[in-house]
Length: 240
Image (cartoon, rainbow, N blue to C red; front, side):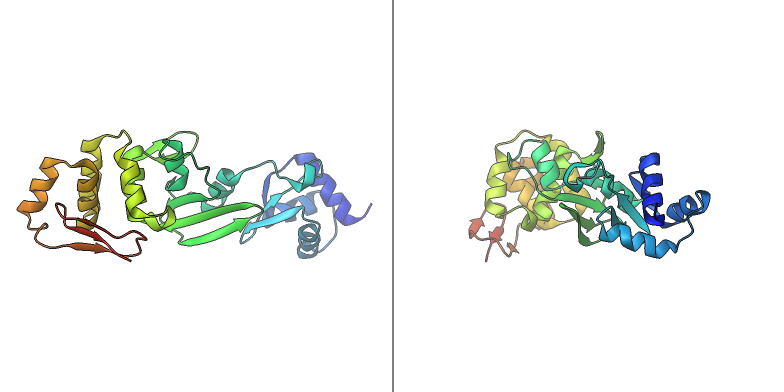
C-alpha cells in the first residue's frame, strides 16, 4: 500500500470532515506514514479529496461520497472560515427566511467584523460584508438577522437585492414591528435610511422627528436605482 493510500485509509477511518495541516501531520506521525506532508496534501488536492478552506484548513471529501459531494454545507463552511468571529446571516438569506421573497438564494450573505470579500468553495458562494453593527440577531440553528434588521440591511445594501423602488413597495406589503424598525433605523444614524423607513411606514412620529431636526428641508438622492422616483413628503429622490 502506498503512503498516500495509507493516509487516505486513516482519514476514512476517523471520518473527518474538516482537518488542519497540523492534524494531518499528527496522523502521519501517529500512523508511521513516512512521507512529506506537503506532497501528500498536494496529491489529495489533485485527487479532489481535500479542498482548501483557508490557510491550513481543509475540507476532506470521503471516497464514499457520491460525485465528490461533501457531507457538509455552506453554513458549516462559513463557521469554519470565520472561526470564533461574531456574525449573522442576512440579506437574501434572511429576506427569503421571512418570506419577503420566494426566490431561493444561491449565495450566503454573512455580516461579520472581519472580512469584506467573496469566496467560492466547491459550489458554495459566500459573500462577506464587514460591519461593526451586529445587532438584531436571532439564533435559529445559525444566527440570522431578525425581520426588522433584515429590512434595515436590505435598504442599506439594496444593490445586492435589486431595484430600490421595487424593494420599498414589497416591504410595504409585509408585516413587521414598526416601532422596532424605527428604533433600528435611528441606531444606524442615517438620514437616508430614516427617510426610506418613513416612505415604508408613513409613521407620523418619525415624520415629526425628521421635520423637527430640519431633515426634510432638502432632498436626499439615492443613486443606482433603475427606476426614477420622487417622494416629496419624505424628500427622497431615486436617480440613475
